Image (tube, rainbow, N blue to C red; front, side):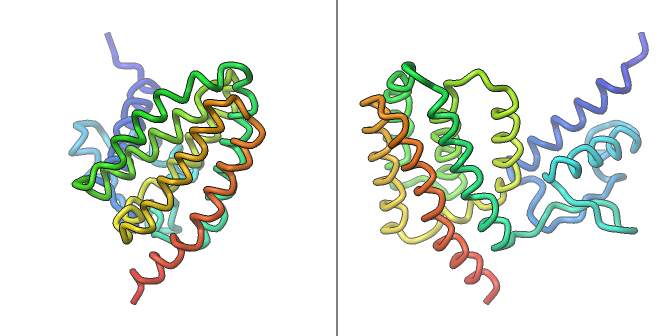
Length: 215
């Protein structure tokens, strides 16, 4: 039976998204359609279609006459997206209602793993992402879930943030701890305000880290 071309495109998109997430496709990298097609064992057409879809979502960018590339790291991305993600996570917390305290235990479990000293920046980034995904998981708004997934996807290449000094990392974990307390107590409004403040405070050290990369 012939392969459904639309399904093939979706499979290619899923694999490319995974490669963006695990760092195989790096920030600033030009995406060679032919090389990607060979790596995936498909023709260039589903690769081109998948790339176009990822560009529409903002996960990659189209470059006139040069195809596609993974967006370079940029302070503007941090300044625009961090507060937006924080606001949407806050909305997710508010929508959790009475089930909010049920998140306390899984959040604390991930938080304990974040405290392990030997973790790599990538491991810390992955755990931090899981912590925030868990925090915003108790709602039934599919559009909100899709928006958060898309926006988080656009900052996947900023894992180097977790290579910053230990004192800064401890400050971020302390903010997590404070949010967990509010979640445990079912204080949705205060927890929502705290997670937004958490993301807003992260803008400054993130932009400082990016400035250091440019030196």
